[in-house]
Length: 393
Image (tube, helix red, strand yellow):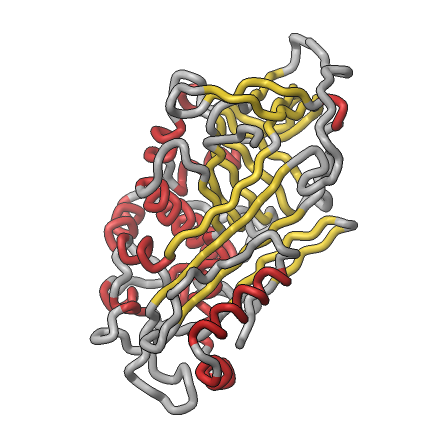
């Protein structure tokens, strides 16, 4: 088995891990064939092993952008890094919207668009000779069990069975598997003593009890169009942050998802400013899995998965021309609590220390909201999801 695409960012006890398992990954800039426009594939810095625009290109969106004025690149910013960041944001929002359309409004969603694009970019690099040999030496079920065990070990048992039963068989040509595990500590922790049970209102109008965390402090914040609130909470080290997007009670999260564009998201991030806040945020745990293949095909990428049209020479030493990606799986997990991620302590039902300072803005996430985890320096979305159900179970 060949594993790659594992990146770690560390600061103190905080860590953010992208675990990407590449079983036998193949990738060619297939979409560049049906969308012949200049692509970030050829412009990205050599030291960034990510190539999201080879996964999804939209000639229509490019044309729309060309109609307007060229966006100004921030001062002292590497142009190619800036273009890569924009490319990732475009892919993240487009992929998320397609995934959200396929799910119920009460379903939680969580994924890493960067990990998906990285895995596909790595297939472009090839070097799968040993992977192919090792995989084919085992039978299908042994391969599946081996992969799942490896993933479970790498995620400390949080993610299991990422490759479902019968996903690998004697007819399988290639499979891509991505597994994500994120763990981080807040720069400003929520006090456990301030957590209490409160109602969380779901999209279908029903309510449930959730463990609502609480703290007061100064955070980057902005109230944008139609009363939507945007809040950024930094993890230790300040290089990775969590962004929460909370619609006002009268507006559904589904509506915000449909209207969201990369330009709108960037504008919101740019407009945020340090603000004194009262933050109410539920503990939540998200685990999601889906077929990347189905989502990318819906977005227009079909040749890569088509044995008749896929052209992926040079991936293995023999230079075979009959290879294609037969399936791609993605499974992601995130748990947020007072410490920032997992903690063993139980919730103490108390309101000690809560303030009613009327001069502070209140951000109360007691209804569905969007969550982004981003790398600040590159302005890159590492994770993206929806918390539609934060109920205690």
